[in-house]
Length: 326
Image (cartoon, rainbow, N blue to C red; front, side, top):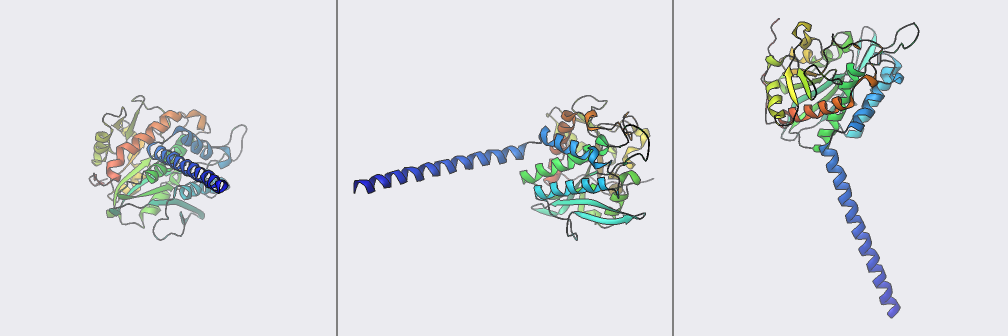
């Protein structure tokens, strides 16, 4: 009898210990989940950047093996994060043909709660110039700042908002193709949507270098065309990060990135940037390598975009519409 009692006591202690261990593990898991929710970390930013701007991607020109590798990488990240396909699509690719080249926009959706039929688009272009046909030395246009940096932002923001789980509006994450060929991908996307359901466009272009305004700053194209920029400025008060209107008006940048395709439809769609297209010494050169970017600048800019646009994504603020008169 004593042996039975002793055995039961040992079993009870073992079960108790196991329960305590499981409870401890649950706390650790919860802490990890909370960390994911509240952080856009530089390690993840670095991983995305160095992958997308690697020589293996061969400059990400539409129709090439390198572009297919980049597309698969983005698709795998969408799947890992848990994004859903866009309406009417079986997967993340919106396939079409342009000038005999088969290409794809890569689209993933994070469905909203109370306003799931209202959309905020977060975008960047994942294509670049490919490779030089001949010559010595480096022949790959890696396109790190233009625009692997923007795609990094799209992926980081997708994971951030998915983990946070507080978006009242649906978020459409898009990596547009063939921007370098004349905004081809974003124009195609715009043909098949109801623009009245898109309340804002957050486009990211060349966000990996310190801007002329100094550290912890970015600028927005078409600032005066809607209330979008002022909403972001208000949300960034007290954060130590500042957003300015585009200071490079002579470059007509509002119409030179994918935001323009949606803005022409009335969507308050603007581009965040830290580097002006025609001033960056590495712009459209083989020297646009991941090593030339500042991971800290890139990470802090993505964090600022998240904080600055969160009230729009959560349904609190709605920017005024854009009117284009050319």
